[in-house]
Length: 628
Image 1 (tube, rainbow, N blue to C red):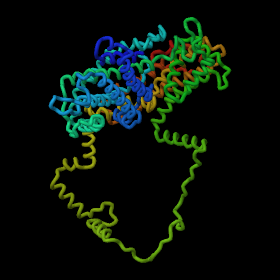
Image 2: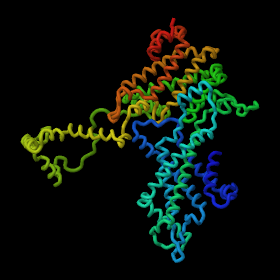
Image 3: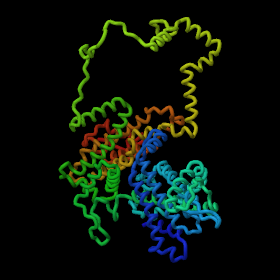
Image 4: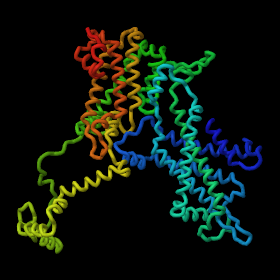
């Protein structure tokens, strides 16, 4: 509805005539509105086809650029944006009257022959040019990535007041000033740069193609392919500026609306999506036979988006919906295990994957070999390939060689080029020597070098000197703004290992940690069957080992030589990783406070409790856990 309102507003601005026909929905404004809405739908197609919920993890900015440049999604996005710009442009040009000078034919003065009008050609080129710029901005700012993690202030507000379903329209009103500001900047940049680009690269091609199609409908056009120039340049600039702003604003609002609606919490009428939902009158709106079963299906989904929203819903259930949380402990008769055992196993697997990625990065050869062996085993089990045959050992048999024809003992004749090459190669060489130059030739070369070059110049021209000088130039280049895309920063390397590639799994990991912590703490009062008690030591050990593994990894990870701004004290504190470790510490601290007095009965040794306390942090010591 918001997109339709925007399209209707722009359709009214394009209209001419009296006020009634400007606002009459069933007339031309309604047709323009539907055509403009087609441009909006094409933007939605771009967003839907490239939708991701995790940040793109790459080691450098250039790698990100290369992935975008070679991906199929970038090419299709450019095509959809160009089609959207074409539909908008034709709608705008069709909406203008004869006084706008945007028709195909410029009649000129009474004594002049009709000619092709270049004004609409420039406008169409401008719209396509803006489509290319919008595509670049789209992927540069990672607009396909939907951010689901809340800020610390929003998390505190949700923990005290609960999740509030704020309408996306209200959020859009707050974003409108920033969207208008960005649209104005892109429009201004397009207007400033389109003229040299058009005159240098686009004018001849656009004019010839337009003239070709123009003669089909207007046979009186002259056959001259020379552009005739612009008509009423001041009016053309105004038309280009206003229409370009409307086009970019249409794209920006469409992108913002899609992001706001997709980033909505998985709730409906204040209840989780998988729950039975009732309206205010108590009538059932959505009926669910097995809410937790549907949740488990989402958590096991192979697709990123459903799986991510399932983890988000699990987090909301564990922290804000007591009835659904209690049902996780009460459902013990499932065929594949109780609901608690399945959910805890899924969350622990997300955490264990962090340690697996760290170990694979520290021993890449072993990690690749293990992955190759697992892949081979999987294919063999699926009967896709047979067992590999080992290559025969030993020397090849003479019988394997083909039979030689002709004179075996006769001397083989060589060509003239081979003889000349052997003669040239033998000059100045000493047989059976590692250095092909004879000692006399080598001394003569050294004597000439000492006479021409100084010792410092010889050192600079040596292999080590050239390598050192080249490295110095490369480091100087990396320190400039032009070299920034080629830097492999420490934070990028750490995030890629901890959260995975090519897309970060940070959202799922954070929700898994927070959900598992909330379930373990709630099990003290809500687990009537006591099934969670036996898994509490496993959760505590996993948290402790993961914290230690991440901290050790950040200390031993070697920075890349391209990270010219690496600071040993500050750069190793990667913000995203530190926040994840803090989530582990908070959860571990709460579990130790809740289960510390039962450590012996749960099977936790004093050593494990001490290691857990150390993982939480020094200074929290004896007052945090009291063991028997």
